[in-house]
Structure formats: C-alpha cells, structure tokens
Image (cartoon, rainbow, N blue to C red; front, side, top):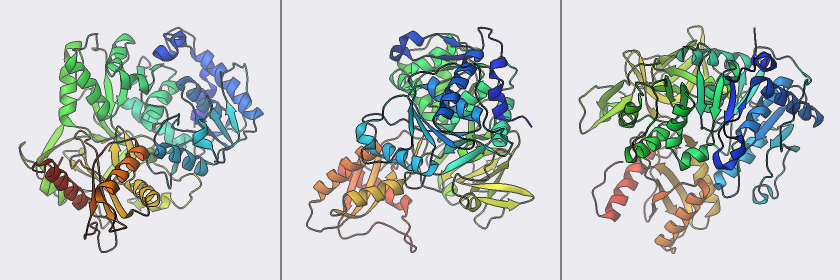
Length: 563
C-alpha cells in the first residue's frame, strides 16, 4: 500500500511546469513573496534540507516533532520534513504576544501530552509565555535550506502514525488523535471524490494550517496531488474578508474551505461593497467546523451570484477523530434545508413544519463520504430509524488510538454489525438520506471555528477568584448555534455574602474576557440561590442559559428573546 510518506518522497519527481506548486500571498507582511510560485522540486529540496537539520538535532524514527510557526510555508515544510524522516509531526497554534491566556495554557498542555523530541519555531516565543515553563529542545528555523538528499529513518507502514491532530478546545486534557497513513489516504480519497479530482484542481485557503479543515482538506490535498495551492494568512482575511473571494477569482482557484462565520464576514463586506471578478470557475466552498446558518449561505450565494458563483457552498460534517470528512453534500448540489418544530427537536422528535415562530431551519450536511458510514443511535445504544440521537461514524478514516492515552479511544469506539463505530458526542438525525446536526452533547461553546470547553473556564475562574466565587457556569447565550454570536453569560454563586455583587460581577467579566478573548454579555451573581444542577451534580446548562437571558432582558428593560 502506498503511504503518504511515499507521496512526500516523490515530490521531487513532479515536473516544474510553472503551473503546479505552492504560492503564499502574505501581503504587506512579506511583500517580496507575493506571487512567487514554489514548484514541487523546490519544495522537495527544502523538505529534505529541513529533514537533515532535524536529524542533526536528535530526531529519531517515530519521534514527535512539534511545529509552532507563524509562517505557513515554514510550517508546511517542517511537517513534510518530519513525515519524510519517519517522525511524527504535530501542528501547534502560534501564541504570539497578547494572545488570550487560554491559548497559552493550551499550548503548554498540548506540549505536555505530545512530549516532542523537538519543538520547531520560526520566531522566539514571548518571554511572558514561557517564563518558569519547561520546554523541549527547540530549533529556530529562520529559513529553509535546500538539500539534494536526506536520510529516511523509518519506512512507514499503513497503520503507523503520519501526524498528530490535537482536538481543539480543552486545555486541561488535550487529546492527540493519531492520524495514521491509512486514515489520511482514505480521507484524502474521499475528499478527492467529492471534488471529482482530475488533476487540474486549484486549491486556495486562509484557515490556519493547524486546523484539520485546512491541514487535511487543503494543504495535504494539494501535496497529495502535486497540484496548485495558494494560501494567505488568517490575519489578512480578518482585516479584509473580501480578499477570500477576490483571490479565488485572481488565482482561478476551484476549491476552498471555511467555517460559517467566514461566509458571514465575506457576506457583510459584499453587501456593503458589491464584489467584482469572475467566480464562474469555482466548484466548491466546503463549509463545516461549526453550525451552518441557512440564511447566511443563501445570502452569500446571492451576493456573489453576479460574479458567476453558483451552488458552490458544500455543507460537510466531520472531526479530527475521523481525520476530517465524514459526510458531505454532492458537489454542485443546491443547498438543502429542513425546517422543524424546535420544541419537538428538543424532545428528540423530528417534526417538519413551515417556517415561522417556534421553528428552526437546519442545513443538511449530506450523506456518508466515500468509505464512511453513519448511524443515529439512541441512549440505549440501539440505532434509530427516526428521531434525534447520537451521531456515530465508521470507516477507514476513523481513529483507533490517541497519543499516549491507550484507553481513551476505547471509550469512544463501539463494535456493532461487524464495524467499529465512533461515538461523536454530537446529536443529529437523518431525513431523506441527509444528516442534520442539531445539537452537541458536550456543551461546547463554538466561536469562529474554535471549540471552547466551559469547564476549563469555570475551573480557572474558580481558582483565580476563589475568595469571591464558589461555583460558576459559563454558557453561550445563543439557543440557536447558527445565530450570530452575542457574547457569553456567566452565572456565579458568591463565596462571601458581604461582597458587593457589582464588583464581583465586574471582576468575573474581566477575567473571563482576558482568559478567552471573547466578550461577556452578562454576569449574574446569585444571592440566596444556587446554580441549577442535576441530582448527580451536573450543570443544567439549558436552564442556566434561560436564566441569564431573562436576567439580561430584565436589566435591559426588554422581553427575553432567547437568542
């Protein structure tokens, strides 16, 4: 069986035709790089050069190499260099000066679990982020030297690790999915089938390389087919959302990917300033990572229709535990939605209804991708023919282990009908063969494609303000996860009755905003009452959300909206 390591070893054999290769559009950050096409033979030479440096710094077969790079080209080269050797790379979210405390804590938590032999950086880490912290041996890569050859420390087998993908969100117990050579090739084949890949595809993206949507769906897909890939920094997209579709037109790119919030940002810009350029060649904008808003997708399509964009948004569902892609709509298919009674959905029933009050419109995420199977399973572990249940997925792309956590995957995998099924923890249903994701069993807060575990915030808050608060609950105030993010709500039980509630609430808001880098819409310090919990002590987050929405409305002098 061919492995992805074999693909990396063969990059130097690709023709330097001036058409296929990598282009990085850094803008003002690196103006001398704008428009430069790196042909695959040059990419291969740089991969070999960096691989040789890794060996000089003690990297051995199977060792983990952690890559912390603000530069996309350096990050990709380091990842491929580790794979070339037979080492195991993992991509880290960069923590520059001024980032949220949560991201710094997550960086160190991931390092502790990954236990890398080498940490690769492209610039010095800020002193305030590493003071008093233990770091692995570190290699500062200022440039990527070229080499005609480099050692191969181990030939990878199908079930050997290709890279580690740490699931986003939790700082206390990060989990590193071991993405094997087999898993990666299976998922890339599924993505290739979705794209009807014929070798002429042109990929473009801005989503950071450490995100599985970008790493697997764009970067490694480009490498796999030795195709054309153009990438620009997320910071440029944040400043100029119109750049996304603008570069799609300029580079004649056929495929890209982004979360729902990216569609919304590009849409707002397009509605203020009508876009120009030809997008008739665009075949797919894969949309996932967070709930997809039907209205946003429709308005996005309408805003760019004058540029020739037609039925390009492709809703998809997946996660790191199945490498990336689990289900998807067909390329070129129109958006499919289903409007159901919200109250019935909350009870586990699916009741289609005409749009109106009390209804919610959900976007179809398609059927199983190539080599994958899906099932909706009830609380008793029995597959359901109708109604809402846990989404389970099966296939060659599904993990069999986490890094340095041999028992963790077993808790998520169940055997049924001769297959291994992954319990995703997400809730959904199937209607007319289409998967609809309607809830999250894990109570994640999702903002701009980032998963935030409330328990992490609550534990940090209770530690930091132990003299002022006893118990806390942090929730997303949205009841509809596809609605616009309006802020977090925090409910607290005070530790001292003599404290001024307004001062406690202000201190809590300041801490949470600094910890997460997200706005807090309301903090409510309870007096003479307790945070709602189940008899087993679990927070009842739906009730907590309703209480905070009502209190916020009372303070604003308005009726609660529930959004």
